[in-house]
Image 1: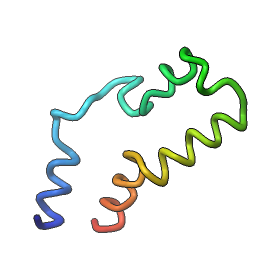
Image 2: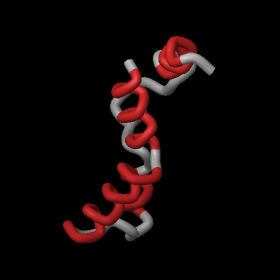
Image 3: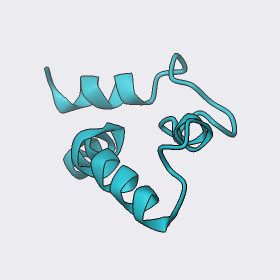
Image 4: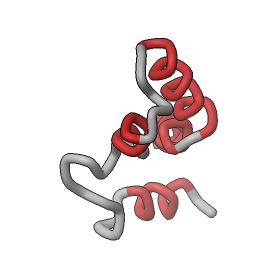
Length: 64
């Protein structure tokens, strides 16, 4: 798949929008008690950057 097609999919209007669209579940993690202090937040954020959507976003940004 070409980078142009990936970028088009990434910018698709089918992706969520709004205040909580890109929180990656932080509200739920906090409500469930998984993120309750700075250390837990750093661990959650590290996982997001290394394995989640933020990594994909960074790869797409670098490719563009």
